[in-house]
Image (cartoon, rainbow, N blue to C red; front, side, top):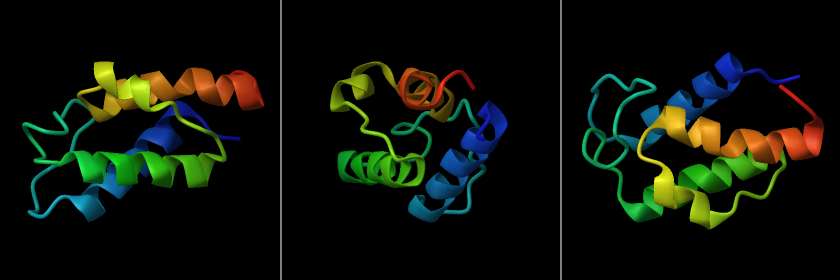
Amino acid sequence: MLNREVLMDYILDCLKNMVENDQEIKPESDLVNDLGLESIKVMNLLMMLEDKLDISIPINILLNVRTPEQLLDAILPQLENNNGSL
């Protein structure tokens, strides 16, 4: 069973492998402005999450996502639909 903390750790670990410098990655880091992620890297992050969590993440969630914390909040409803409440 997954919980918010485990999911956030996974998201942050994925981001560490995508960010080119050794800057600190926090739940409130801006994916584009702070971490410098290009759209292809954000899409790769979504694919990693889909594979790990065995869910389908609608691309339109990215319209309101700027931070890892917001990403987690956006995918939680998908997880809850598939697995029940976290």
